[in-house]
Length: 322
Ligand SMILES: NC(=O)c1ccc[n+]([C@@H]2O[C@H](COP(=O)([O-])OP(=O)(O)OC[C@H]3O[C@@H](n4cnc5c(N)ncnc54)[C@H](OP(=O)(O)O)[C@@H]3O)[C@@H](O)[C@H]2O)c1
Image (tube, rainbow, N blue to C red; front, side, top):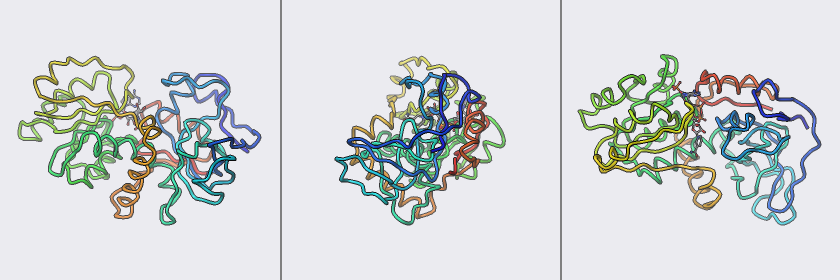
């Protein structure tokens, strides 16, 4: 099979598009013939050896796929050959065939296309977990989303709008703010004076929920933009540094900071993850979720797609089509 192989940690230019033997599923695993996969920010960290879990070399990059089950491990009974699935693979997804844990593969209803399926597990899964289950965002509340034109940012906008919330989207360029607007954001702002801009848009109250996949120097102003009893969702640190937050800000707002770790949560709660997926499929059927695909690449285009993510140029989700 063709695969995108990481033999040394470093930039996308070091990746090799090569041939490997088909992987064979062992106990608890399934083999997926990949129809589409998508780029997630951690893919860029993985190839540089900078993700929380350092992947042993060599490995095939790619964390999320959709396709058809081609083979199953000896003890797998929950999924059958021929089933259409979406799966988080952690690694191995940028290849014609990928191994996933059977527990991480979600069966796809016939009306869910591979194109959406390849983009929904991580971004929509994370946004749904954070907004619905953890922050308990309610209709009529205001959500502030940072990195609003990125993968999880757009997912957060679409889910929050479907829940009846008002969305303030922060993004770094007019093009990105236009993408956030297309996803349904009510208000568009840059990162300057994020607290004052948010307060002005909320009648001085501040946002009820903040969704922050960016971190670094943007985190504290975003927390200051949060209102009384607000919930601040720690999603990621795309801007680089892990911020240190003065805890008095939470005390003064009677607020909470909530860490969201979708992959770990999903592996500990497979039944709940499957029910979130069902809810997301329903939202897709209602036209509330779109995937907002901002670029399509063949397998050979994975390095270029990763460069877009690393240079902060990507808008929406980048799709890899086999
Ligand atoms: N907690 C979880 O379970 C979970 C799940 C999925 C993703 N994540 C994390 O969420 C973050 C975003 O992931 P994503 O897939 O949405 O990535 P993405 O599509 O690349 O979006 C990230 C956004 O962050 C902003 N950004 C600010 N500084 C940046 C920089 N130096 N380099 C790149 N982007 C920068 C960019 O928006 P502006 O240019 O508008 O600032 C960009 O659109 C990542 O840190 C990822 O690891 C966490």
